[in-house]
Length: 71
Image 1 (cartoon, rainbow, N blue to C red):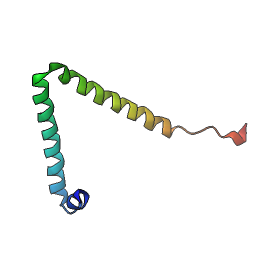
Image 2 (image 1 turned 90 degrees about the horizontal axis):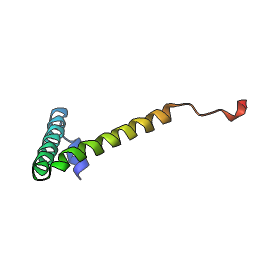
Image 3 (image 1 turned 135 degrees about the horizontal axis):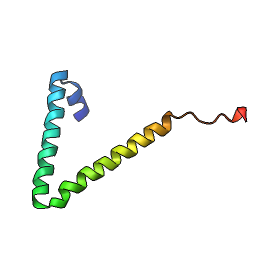
């Protein structure tokens, strides 16, 4: 249902929805960090860890596998 609604939007409306979601997430993160300062540090560290893991996983998939026929 949500996918159908999102896909029926124009490109400009989809971009507005994405930016609104990002702004809402940032506001929620900062308001939560206001109550607990450790949250301000841990969320970016966890996100950075997932990002590095994703990069390493993508790089590992790009490497060619050993061709056992040539051995």
